[in-house]
Image 1: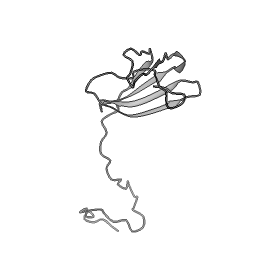
Image 2: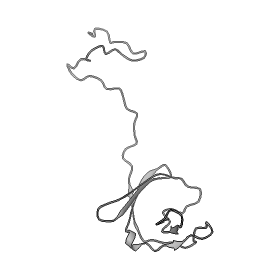
Image 3: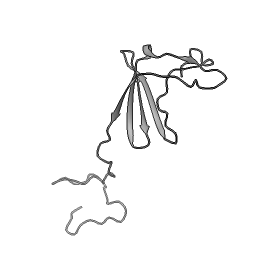
Image 4: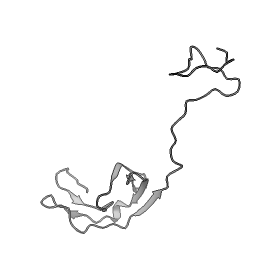
Length: 118
């Protein structure tokens, strides 16, 4: 929806219309070419990227607080394929001859390996 005064609103487009689905964490920016870019999580499975040309939007007034039944837009949807499933980060370990600096001590129940120098 869009509004010029924050009081009167017009429906501009429906981004998703799937019952019992979750769409979260929207982020919206307008680039220097005038295009509006939206990203959001789709069913906690993917991040979707929607590019909208605001000049092509046809708005319909929202009356009595009800969304108009027919609001369309032929925007271009792009799906960002998820990268490999995120793995928990492991604690950084020194490589080769690298030694911890300062008072670095093992965390938790970790014990230095036998023969390790401090």
